[in-house]
Length: 283
Ligand SMILES: Cc1cc2nc3c(=O)[nH]c(=O)nc-3n(C[C@H](O)[C@H](O)[C@H](O)COP(=O)(O)OP(=O)(O)OC[C@H]3O[C@@H](n4cnc5c(N)ncnc54)[C@H](O)[C@@H]3O)c2cc1C
Figure 1 (cartoon, rainbow, N blue to C red):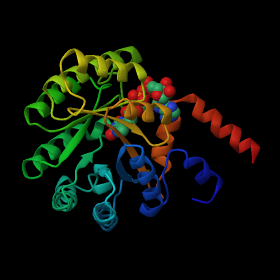
Figure 2 (cartoon, helix red, strand yellow):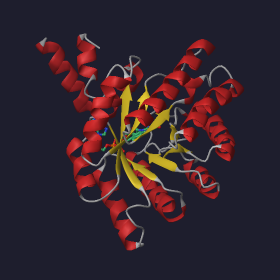
Figure 3 (spheres, protein in one colour):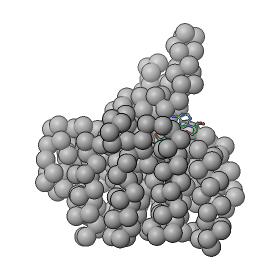
């Protein structure tokens, strides 16, 4: 990542390969912050490439094990061949899950746009029957999420709760940000009370404070859930949460296929666009 865009992307991306990301993982671990690594990439249409991406995850799991760093992995099913077929994707990801099981590690399946929600849930339900070392992501912006959370809780599948990063049609998603936030709080309470080791993934201080309050009012220990944030976003809040004695995990993306991830981070906050424009003008 030597060009100008690469330089700008480094704000959100830990490096071009695992070795570069490892420095950042070690730095975070030294601050009592765990990580989950993401090999960047999505919507892979060739079987050869999807298998190679799965191998990159198996390689990363091996290196996490041999270096002793404290990290899980997170992956996207469209990178693993979901656009090719459910069966191909199922087999491809099963190899990663088996490696993670061998290393006693954990795999989180990210949630992509709503075209993939149902198939992602069905595949995760299937995998979880053989691989308990995995979890999924639920987006509070989707109207269906409360039902999905209850079913995942019933199956004891760990959920990472986020607001949702994809643009969705109003027929299936909350339009107003206040409703997305209200649903986030509702799902957070259901997950903390009835879920299996939920991950509360947000940079929103209001959501973080409400989670801490709900846990303390209901006698839910700080080891029963964790907070998660993205690499490079609200770093001081990340450190503060860890210093306050809560579990904090950072999503650490690395790799060369960074543009779609980067674009979602820019879209989330208009100040990021100004930051880019300012730097482009300067150079
Ligand atoms: C660990 C983790 C994993 C995720 N996995 C998924 C997933 O699998 N599927 C999915 O759809 N989404 C995922 N997301 C993204 C998520 O859905 C949101 O798009 C994103 O986190 C922004 O929402 P927020 O909760 O931070 O709240 P917001 O209300 O969007 O933001 C709250 C505050 O956080 C800060 N902030 C938020 N985003 C940015 C940014 N890009 N740059 C700088 N500051 C920012 C700002 O200070 C902002 O005011 C994940 C998020 C996290 C933290």
